[in-house]
Image (cartoon, rainbow, N blue to C red; front, side, top):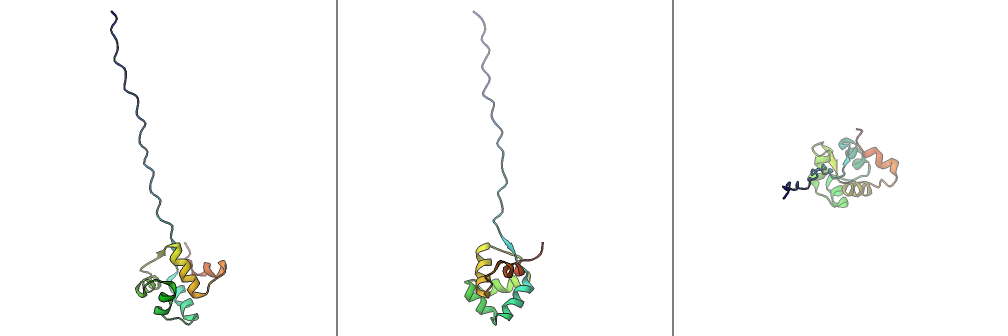
Length: 96
């Protein structure tokens, strides 16, 4: 009787871990935000209320402590400032 060779276990495919994409965010120019807020005649609390965010969040953006915001927050801030056109909204985006 011939000797049987044990079968090899099936080769496993290596697990490839794909990096998790960071959530999309928008870089905001804080000093420009302050300028546009003042031109719109809004105080910090007024902009925060109109954009449904906190006063401290607006302050952190304006002072550069918070450099990026979510697209939803960016849109609400732009709407609160009356920035409807894409060219107007681009003014608020920080140059990379």
